[in-house]
Amino acid sequence: MVVVTVKSLDGQDVADFARNLGNRWGVGRKAVNDGVILVVAPNERKARIAVGDGLRSSLSDSVCQDIMDRKIIKRFKKGDLPGGIQAGIDALIDRLSQRG
Image (tube, rainbow, N blue to C red; front, side, top):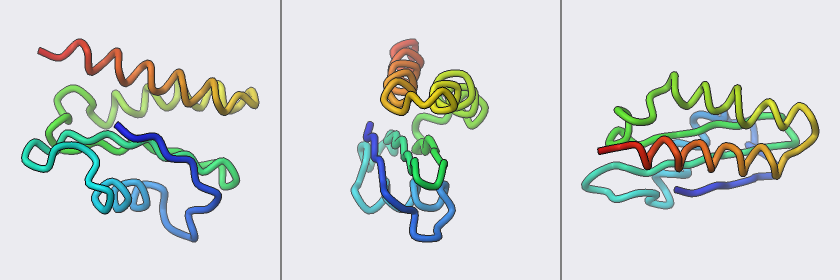
């Protein structure tokens, strides 16, 4: 799992940026495709959780959106960027620890 904050997405869609960065950095195990990346671009007010296909059963799009809405964005709107990031990480780890 990687958390990245960036000054700018340089005009890219946040989903494309997250996927491309995760692939370029090799986040997760290649054979399992189990990487998770949280990208936060505070200047553009964008954030995204990108998940490798190997974790889709645990971190589906709807689960990730719920974490974004209830944990991350909720705190971002209150001006608590570090708290939102930490809450998101905690929620992702909690969800992944329930696997198996």
